[in-house]
Length: 179
Figure 1: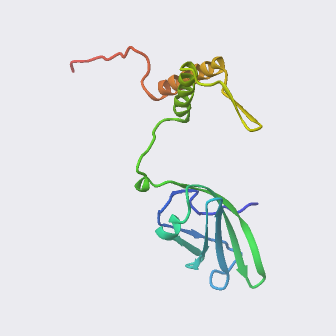
Figure 2 (figure 1 turned 180 degrees about the vertical axis):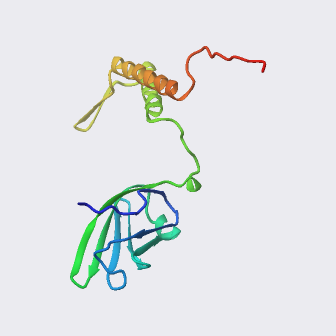
Figure 3 (figure 1 turned 30 degrees about the vertical axis):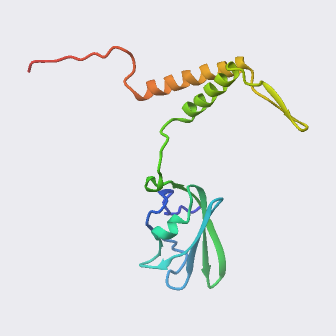
Protein backbone atom coordinates (compact mmCIF):
# COMPACT_ATOMS: atom_id res chain seq x y z
CA UNK A 1 0.00 0.00 0.00
CA UNK A 2 1.49 3.38 -1.01
CA UNK A 3 2.23 5.87 1.74
CA UNK A 4 0.32 9.13 1.96
CA UNK A 5 2.52 12.15 2.57
CA UNK A 6 1.45 15.35 4.32
CA UNK A 7 3.39 17.76 2.10
CA UNK A 8 1.05 20.48 0.76
CA UNK A 9 0.08 19.49 -2.78
CA UNK A 10 -0.32 23.10 -3.92
CA UNK A 11 1.27 26.29 -2.65
CA UNK A 12 2.36 29.72 -3.87
CA UNK A 13 5.94 30.55 -4.76
CA UNK A 14 7.57 32.29 -1.78
CA UNK A 15 5.26 30.84 0.88
CA UNK A 16 6.61 29.59 4.20
CA UNK A 17 5.61 25.95 4.68
CA UNK A 18 5.84 23.37 7.40
CA UNK A 19 4.38 19.91 7.72
CA UNK A 20 4.72 16.80 9.85
CA UNK A 21 5.34 13.22 8.72
CA UNK A 22 4.82 10.14 10.88
CA UNK A 23 6.08 6.65 9.97
CA UNK A 24 5.68 4.16 12.86
CA UNK A 25 8.22 1.72 11.36
CA UNK A 26 11.04 4.23 11.86
CA UNK A 27 12.56 5.98 14.88
CA UNK A 28 12.48 9.78 14.72
CA UNK A 29 15.39 9.95 17.20
CA UNK A 30 17.86 7.87 15.16
CA UNK A 31 16.59 7.86 11.54
CA UNK A 32 16.85 10.74 9.08
CA UNK A 33 14.01 11.66 6.72
CA UNK A 34 14.79 13.75 3.63
CA UNK A 35 12.61 15.23 0.92
CA UNK A 36 13.99 15.99 -2.55
CA UNK A 37 11.75 18.30 -4.58
CA UNK A 38 12.50 18.20 -8.30
CA UNK A 39 10.99 19.75 -11.40
CA UNK A 40 12.01 21.20 -14.72
CA UNK A 41 12.38 24.67 -13.24
CA UNK A 42 13.90 24.18 -9.81
CA UNK A 43 15.05 21.88 -7.04
CA UNK A 44 15.13 21.98 -3.24
CA UNK A 45 16.53 19.44 -0.78
CA UNK A 46 15.07 19.27 2.74
CA UNK A 47 16.00 17.31 5.83
CA UNK A 48 13.34 16.92 8.49
CA UNK A 49 13.89 17.48 12.18
CA UNK A 50 12.90 14.65 14.53
CA UNK A 51 10.05 15.94 16.64
CA UNK A 52 7.53 14.33 18.99
CA UNK A 53 7.08 10.91 17.39
CA UNK A 54 7.76 11.97 13.80
CA UNK A 55 9.58 14.39 11.54
CA UNK A 56 8.87 18.04 10.89
CA UNK A 57 9.75 19.67 7.58
CA UNK A 58 9.96 23.40 7.03
CA UNK A 59 10.51 25.36 3.85
CA UNK A 60 11.46 29.03 4.25
CA UNK A 61 10.23 31.81 1.99
CA UNK A 62 13.69 32.09 0.39
CA UNK A 63 13.96 28.37 -0.36
CA UNK A 64 10.37 28.24 -1.63
CA UNK A 65 11.16 31.16 -3.96
CA UNK A 66 13.78 28.95 -5.63
CA UNK A 67 10.92 26.88 -7.08
CA UNK A 68 9.48 28.50 -10.20
CA UNK A 69 5.83 27.98 -11.00
CA UNK A 70 5.06 24.49 -12.28
CA UNK A 71 4.58 20.87 -11.33
CA UNK A 72 7.17 19.08 -9.19
CA UNK A 73 7.71 15.72 -7.56
CA UNK A 74 8.80 15.31 -3.96
CA UNK A 75 10.70 12.10 -3.18
CA UNK A 76 10.88 11.01 0.45
CA UNK A 77 13.95 9.04 1.54
CA UNK A 78 14.64 7.51 4.95
CA UNK A 79 18.19 6.87 6.17
CA UNK A 80 18.19 4.38 9.01
CA UNK A 81 20.50 1.84 10.58
CA UNK A 82 19.39 -0.68 7.94
CA UNK A 83 20.30 1.65 5.06
CA UNK A 84 18.60 3.99 2.62
CA UNK A 85 14.95 3.45 1.64
CA UNK A 86 12.84 5.48 -0.76
CA UNK A 87 9.41 5.76 0.87
CA UNK A 88 7.60 7.24 -2.12
CA UNK A 89 6.86 10.24 -4.28
CA UNK A 90 4.25 12.98 -4.02
CA UNK A 91 3.19 15.38 -6.77
CA UNK A 92 3.09 19.07 -5.90
CA UNK A 93 2.24 22.26 -7.78
CA UNK A 94 3.86 25.64 -7.22
CA UNK A 95 1.65 28.56 -8.21
CA UNK A 96 2.87 32.04 -9.09
CA UNK A 97 2.76 34.91 -6.66
CA UNK A 98 0.89 38.03 -7.76
CA UNK A 99 3.40 40.19 -5.86
CA UNK A 100 6.03 39.81 -8.60
CA UNK A 101 3.61 40.39 -11.49
CA UNK A 102 3.60 43.75 -13.22
CA UNK A 103 0.67 42.82 -15.48
CA UNK A 104 -1.97 40.14 -15.46
CA UNK A 105 -3.89 39.02 -18.53
CA UNK A 106 -7.21 37.73 -17.17
CA UNK A 107 -8.36 36.47 -20.58
CA UNK A 108 -8.93 32.77 -21.17
CA UNK A 109 -6.75 30.80 -23.60
CA UNK A 110 -9.67 30.87 -26.06
CA UNK A 111 -9.85 34.67 -25.87
CA UNK A 112 -6.11 34.98 -26.48
CA UNK A 113 -6.26 32.61 -29.44
CA UNK A 114 -9.24 34.51 -30.86
CA UNK A 115 -7.16 37.69 -30.83
CA UNK A 116 -4.36 35.96 -32.78
CA UNK A 117 -6.80 34.44 -35.30
CA UNK A 118 -8.54 37.79 -35.83
CA UNK A 119 -5.19 39.51 -36.44
CA UNK A 120 -4.19 36.78 -38.95
CA UNK A 121 -7.48 37.29 -40.82
CA UNK A 122 -6.89 41.05 -40.88
CA UNK A 123 -3.40 40.54 -42.34
CA UNK A 124 -4.73 38.22 -45.05
CA UNK A 125 -7.59 40.54 -45.96
CA UNK A 126 -5.24 43.56 -46.14
CA UNK A 127 -3.16 41.81 -48.80
CA UNK A 128 -0.50 39.99 -46.82
CA UNK A 129 1.42 37.39 -48.74
CA UNK A 130 -0.23 33.99 -48.32
CA UNK A 131 2.98 32.08 -49.04
CA UNK A 132 6.71 32.78 -49.03
CA UNK A 133 10.03 30.94 -49.29
CA UNK A 134 13.21 31.39 -47.26
CA UNK A 135 16.06 29.31 -48.64
CA UNK A 136 14.75 25.77 -49.03
CA UNK A 137 11.89 26.25 -46.53
CA UNK A 138 8.42 27.30 -47.59
CA UNK A 139 5.99 28.98 -45.20
CA UNK A 140 2.26 29.26 -45.82
CA UNK A 141 -0.52 31.06 -43.97
CA UNK A 142 -3.66 29.14 -43.19
CA UNK A 143 -6.56 29.39 -45.60
CA UNK A 144 -9.00 32.24 -44.91
CA UNK A 145 -11.90 29.76 -44.67
CA UNK A 146 -10.02 27.73 -42.01
CA UNK A 147 -9.24 30.88 -40.04
CA UNK A 148 -12.82 32.19 -40.11
CA UNK A 149 -14.13 28.75 -39.13
CA UNK A 150 -11.76 28.67 -36.14
CA UNK A 151 -12.71 32.24 -35.27
CA UNK A 152 -16.42 31.37 -35.14
CA UNK A 153 -15.70 28.22 -33.10
CA UNK A 154 -13.73 30.25 -30.52
CA UNK A 155 -16.43 32.91 -30.32
CA UNK A 156 -19.01 30.21 -29.52
CA UNK A 157 -16.79 28.68 -26.82
CA UNK A 158 -16.23 32.08 -25.25
CA UNK A 159 -19.97 32.90 -25.26
CA UNK A 160 -20.73 29.51 -23.71
CA UNK A 161 -18.06 29.98 -21.00
CA UNK A 162 -19.38 33.44 -20.14
CA UNK A 163 -22.94 32.11 -19.94
CA UNK A 164 -21.79 29.47 -17.42
CA UNK A 165 -20.26 32.13 -15.17
CA UNK A 166 -22.93 34.84 -15.29
CA UNK A 167 -26.66 34.90 -14.74
CA UNK A 168 -27.30 34.45 -18.45
CA UNK A 169 -30.22 35.33 -20.62
CA UNK A 170 -31.66 38.75 -21.31
CA UNK A 171 -34.60 38.59 -18.91
CA UNK A 172 -34.24 38.55 -15.16
CA UNK A 173 -37.28 38.11 -12.95
CA UNK A 174 -37.45 40.10 -9.73
CA UNK A 175 -40.33 40.13 -7.32
CA UNK A 176 -40.99 42.45 -4.41
CA UNK A 177 -43.20 41.70 -1.47
CA UNK A 178 -44.64 44.07 1.08
CA UNK A 179 -44.13 42.22 4.32
